[in-house]
Structure formats: structure tokens, C-alpha cells
Image (cartoon, rainbow, N blue to C red; front, side, top):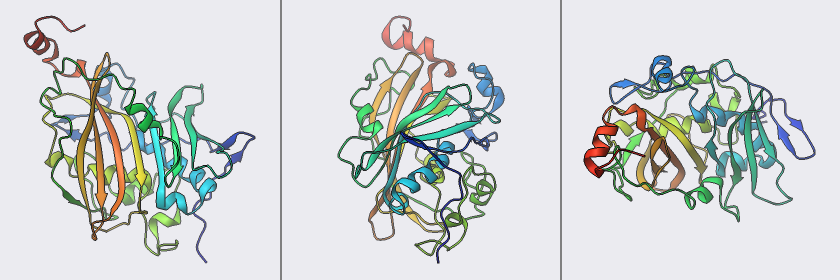
Length: 318
């Protein structure tokens, strides 16, 4: 008999399912990219106006896994999708709670959000399984973006640019590199919602499966070897993210091939954004999962931004 996926205490309300309050752990203090520290480093984050190093967005995905499994069972591990817009940063020590609305009978998609104790909304979006009849949160958001105008940091990045395929793997004790300086075993020791499905073969697939939050790590593992031609050094953050299982789950210690395509370029007052869709394939060549990621680069973090803008466009940035 297979173990239960989760022992998480879930509260059912008239409108939805509510998970317990959790304090996610920050594991990226030592993260390095473009040879400099990231927004998860206290000093770097404070220079940009944050209180300290921020918790990486997909860390929050784990709190939604028990809720998705309660709604859709095994299907959530095989064809589940979390599609979110990050609205506020979270710091280590802060408590957050995952909430999902109840989908109508037979529906394959519902609204989700995460909040802090003071009501601050950390993220909002959708959870789904299979092929819902309506767009996910980020599919809808892609149609509403403000196009990138007057680019500086991303001026050499081309829409539809597709990188080379890379082979990636995640073993239990494998350090996941400069971007993710920890192992899966270390993550499982502090993950907000652990499961026997992650560490043992006591599950329907008879192999340990990779938690959804760690799929982000797997897909980004070798991204530094084929970077976008963005100007830097500059500091980026995850502003939007969707992870979709197509033929899941994905397994520990298994080879996959990934490729990334730039599918949109957008901007805001403070950021320039490259939206990349990563596609993951198994050894047979079948598409098994995708990730849509908006890496928003902060204009103020690029030392040459104002001078280069003036040189390119003959005026000061607005």
C-alpha cells in the first residue's frame, strides 16, 4: 500500500482549501550569477531597497502541493500546473499561508493566492491539471504585457531566441551549482511540505519524484552556460513563473534535456523583463514539463543604465 502523499493539515472552508502557516527557509544567500551576489544576498538586496535577502519565489510552490493533491489526487503530480504573479517579497522568518479556491464541479483550474500574517499578498495566480478550458494566470498575463520599449539592459536580446539543448539531472546529493548552492537532500531537510514521494519509492511511480519547487532548480541548472546577451552586471528577480507538468512526474537521478525560448519582452517603470519558456524532454524525446519564467532585471542595479539610455535615445530615462 502506497503512503499518503502529505500529512499537511488542511482547513476546508465554504470557498476553498487553506494550508497551515509556514516559515519558508532562505537557501540562496551564497547564490552567484554574473560573478556577483544576487537579490537573495542581504547586502545586495538592501542596496536595492529591500530589508534583506528575499526567499526565492518557487519555494512557495511546495505549500500548494498538498492543496492541489487534495483537489485532484495523483493527477496533480502528473499534469499539475502552478501559474503565478509574484506580488511581494518574503523574508526568512515571515509566516505565509497558501489558499486555493474550490473549482466548480469538474473544473480543472482554480484561483490561488499566498498571504502573510498582515494580509500582504505574496503571490496570486491559478492551479490546474491537464488542459483546462480557460487560460492559466500567465497565459492571460502574456496578452496584457507592456511591450519593452527603449531597451538598455536587454537591447541585444531577440524575441524567439532559442538556446541550445542541455542535459540536466538532479541527484539527492548533487550540489546544484552557483545559482542553487545546495542539494536536493538539503532542500528536503527544510522544505515546507515534505512527502515520502520525494525521498523514497513508496509512491505510485515506484521512484523518488522531484518536488515542483525543485523543477525550477533543475530547469535553470545549466542556464549560465547559455546566457541571454543581457548587459550587466545587474540584479534580476523572478516576477512571474509557471511550472506545468505535461507527462509527469519528473524523477530524481534521471537525465532530461531542456531548451529555452524567449517568448516575450516587457518592461515596467523599474524593470526590463525577458520571458523565457523552458521545455523539458525525457530520454524518448517526449515533452514532460514546461516552465514560463519572467526574469525582471532592475534598471537601478545596472550601473551604466542612465548613461547608456541617454547615448541610445538622446534623452534621460523617464
